[in-house]
Image 1 (cartoon, one colour):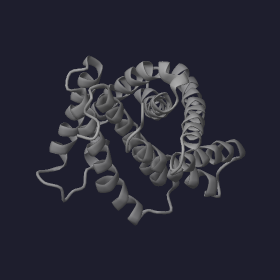
Image 2: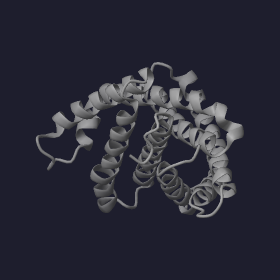
Image 3: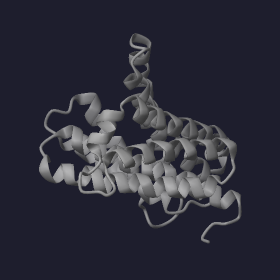
Image 4: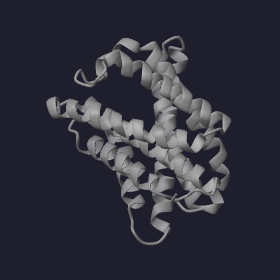
Amino acid sequence: MTSGGGRFGLAAGAVLYGGVDLLWPAAGGWLRLLAAVELAGGVALLWPRGQTAPRAGAAALTAVYLIVTAITLPDIVRHPAVFNSWGNAGEELARLAGAALLLAMLWPAARRLAKPACWAFAVCVLSFALEQWVYFAPTVALVPAWLPPGRVFWAIATTLAFGLAAAALLSGRMALIAARLLTAMLVGFGLLVWVPILIQHSHVLGNWTEFAETLSIAGAAWVVSDHRAVATGRAGR
C-alpha cells in the first residue's frame, strides 16, 4: 500500500515540532534527544527516492510518539478527574496513531498496525470534541473575532464537527469524506488560529508547540484519509 499527501503533512508537523524543541534554549536533555529523533524522522519522510528512508522516518516517529504518549499517562493516574490530563494524552495518541498508520502503509511487515491505529485515531477525535465541550469558554476565545458569524457559532460548529467525524470514523460510514473534512478543519485551525497568535507572540514556546501539534494531528488525519481512499479504491479521485 502506498502513502499519499498525508506523509508530507505528518512530516511538516514533525520537522516543526522537533526543530522548535531542539533549538529552544530552555529545552532539557531528554527533550532535545526526542526532538532530534522527531526532526530526523520528519526529514526522512520527505526523502524523494525509495521507501527505505520514509519507512525509517515513520518508524522513528512512531517510537517517539509512543514514548511521549506514555509520558502523559502518569498524569491521568494522578488526576483522573481532570479532563486536561486525558486531553493531552489524546493529542499525543493522535500523532502516534498517524505515524503508526503511515508505517503500516509504507512497510508490509507492519500492516497489522493499521486497524488499531485507525481505531485509536477515531477515539482521539472523539476526545477532541469532548475537550472543546468541557473547555468551551477557552475554545470560544481562540476563535478569531473577525470571523463571521461569530466566535460562539464556530466553537459549537467545530465541536459538532469533531463529534460527527469521530462517529463516521468509528462506524466506517462516510469515513473518507469525514477524514478529508477533518484534515481541512485542522489545517484551518493552524492557519486561522495559531498563525496570527504566533505573529503576535512568537516568543512563547507554547504557541509554537501548539501550532506544530495542530499540523501533526492534521497530518495524521490526512494519513487516515489516504488509508481510507486506498481501502475504498478512491485514491487520487
